[in-house]
Structure formats: C-alpha cells, structure tokens
Image (cartoon, rainbow, N blue to C red; front, side):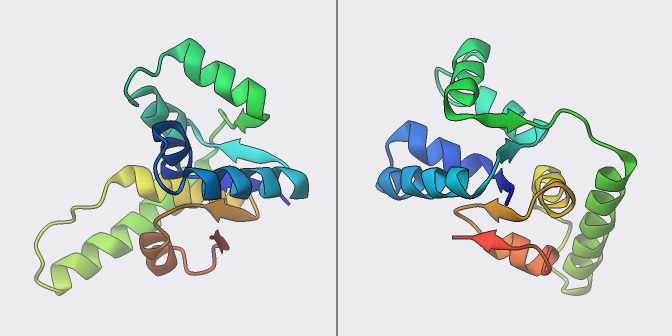
Length: 138
C-alpha cells in the first residue's frame, strides 16, 4: 500500500509539535505497509520550513525512504483543476466570495488519488470534501 504524505505530517515531525510522536508512529506503520511518497508541491513546501535547506530535505527523504514523485502527467493536473473549479464554483454560490484555499491542496489531493492508496494528513477536512473517494489517514 503506497502512502502519499501531506506537508503537515512532516512539518509536525520536524517542529516537535505535540503530535510528533503520533506522526512518527504513523509514518513507521505506513512504511511497513508499503512505500511512502510525496509530490513535488510537498517538497517545495518543505523547503520553506524554517532552517530547511535542500540538503536537509533531501537527506531526510533519503533516511526515511520517502520518495519524491517528480513526474506529473496530464491526468494529475486535470484532476486538480477539475476539483479546484468545483470548489471555486461552490464558494461563489455560497456567497463566500472568491476561493481562498491554496491550489497546492488540490495538487496534493489529485496526486494522492491517482498515485497512492492513502493520503497521510493532519487536516483531512478539505480532502474529504473535495476528494471524497480518497482514503485518508489518520
């Protein structure tokens, strides 16, 4: 079983948040079940973490066996665009103004749906709504 990882999982681990121990166990369990993968958007977001350098991020990925899936085909981009479009239409109909969610979430969701079996995230709400068929953990 291949697990895609959202940025907030690794950020929680790196920052030593209260959830860090839970996240470490979650990653260990997921690694035992199969491969761990991040999409390029998660890699970019990780590089923005305080004190994270390219070598720090790359070393972490190597040491943990997390693969970066650098190749995005048209299907991922189209699915992300489709789900973002639905979200934008929904927000406008709800008279809540213009869309405020980051497009990165839609790319992460599309990647996880098409290239993994489950998405590990600490914020499942937006994915449940916009990628209802995506398996989420925790």
